[in-house]
Length: 465
Image 1 (tube, rainbow, N blue to C red):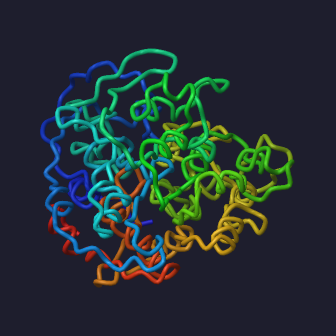
Image 2: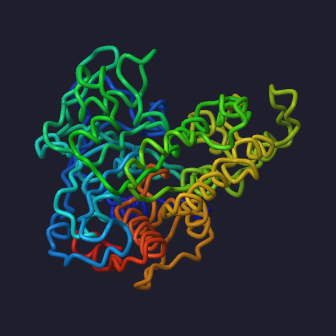
């Protein structure tokens, strides 16, 4: 991992991550928040240094308002039809950035960028209003911290209104939507109804788009097919669950990641019937593999290479509480105790703070009978385009990914691919993914959709590439 330098790189990180300019530091807390934060360090107040305000200097509309000629769609849709696209998925597709859902990230999410290249003018995402532009709120790297390991500040201004409840709620969106992706989305989210047993973390975001009382009788998929009929689908199905499992499960096993599908003899999270329902009436579209969490910038914040003698001693003496796991830690998560250990202070680490080599084998989407293999097979069998995020993220992690216009993509914590949460992409990262979607569509359906010139895109939105 590249070293986290002191103050200057944290300022640079604000530039390359797409989070850009923080306005003022403040000790004042924001209006009450009831939804759980989407940022992986939000549960560790010792890693957060107060509040800051933020006004975006980016200009998404400068790019999105550019006129694009209708390209050759090839066999994407039947001859004579226009493309009517929708998107389903989780935080990646919804536009989570810097550990939050907010207007800037929604505007620059890859589905919007793909829709623009397709020449579509009716693809709408549920944007937060300008006076609530910072949405759920998010975390930015601290401008005042000068230590080796990162610290954060919470954005406290222009937040969307939240209300307590079971579950809590957030400001609704009243316009037409074609991006139905929601943070913490699950494979079954498109088919879920509000009367289903229990409450789920994606529901407050879903109910921004589809009122709770409507969702009692209509699933998101049924709602989309009635209100926004479509013939092309972007479907990213399980990344959020995979990450949530990695962050929260003390001792991994395959059941944690594959669940009941193991007992059903299935090799992927989704069922074929889900694909049948999503791709109805001959609709075509794009599927995505799951990137390995080892390739995320988040996993580089506290790497073994950075470990002091105390860290090395901890690894040597480590014994998992899972008696089936004799292996040693290979990755450390960003927790208060891990931070203390890496700074040479006394700390007791629970199993949930580390990932062992044994756990890696049980949580790998590239397992020979696992999710990604099944996704690739389904895409080939059903003539669906495939974006192999697993392979793409691996190339980025290895430092060998270069865009078609010659921009080197950097997947390190200070790089240009990830936002500052280390998990979800920056605007440049979304442009990279959008281009990979376009390449997959062109390859599968003999289309001629132009790629995004990533350097021009960055300049247009006022972002240093």
